[in-house]
Image 1 (tube, one colour):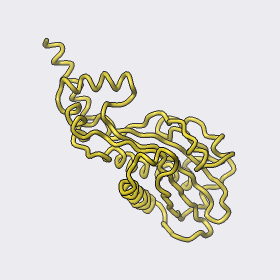
Image 2: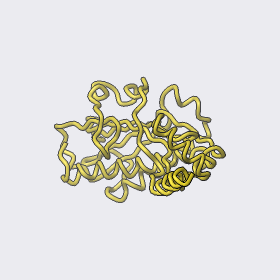
Image 3: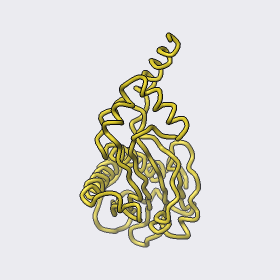
Image 4: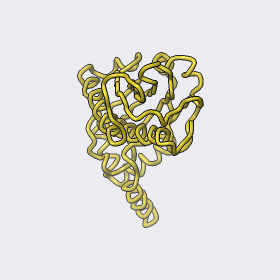
Length: 229
C-alpha cells in the first residue's frame, strides 16, 4: 500500500512540472495541402525537437531581409471546422490573430500593407477539440484518477478529456508571393495541474499561445541570421 501511495504522490508531483500544452503527431487532413498548396505541401518533413510537427523552409530564401510582418489568421479551414460552433470559431480566430500579432510585434514591425522587407504570415486552424471540463478536473486533481489518466496518456499519447487544435502556417514574401516556409502542428492539453480547471476551449487557447511564441522565435532565428534556411 505504501508503495502505491508513493507512486501516486510522485505522479502528482511530476504533473506540477508538466506543460499546459503538448505537441502530438499531426493528423492527416486534405485541408493541409488545400491551404499550403503544392509543391510546398509535398515538401513538408517531420520537424526536429522544438520545431513544428511538419515543416519546410525554402533553402533559397534570404530571410535576413525581412524586418516587417503582416499577420493573417484566416480562421477555420476544412471539413473539421463544422464541429466547432461559428461563435467559438470567431473567438478562437480573434485570439489567434491578437496572440500572434502581439508575439511578432516583440521582434518586428507589424504592418497591414505589402512592401519591401515585409513577410506575410498566414495561419489556418484545421481542427479544434473541446475539453470536458468536469471530467478533466477529476482526472487532474484526484490522485487515483490522476494515476489512471497518466496510464491512459502512456497508451494513447494524450490525457483523457483534454482538448486541442491543429493548425497550418505559411510564410510568403508580401510582394512576390514566394513561399518562404510552411508548417503544420498539432497540440493537446498537457498534464500540468494548472489545466485542472481549464474551460471547454482552454486547451485550444493554450495551443494558440504556444504557437504564437514558437512561430515568432523560429522566424526570428532565421531573420536575425542566427539560423540558415
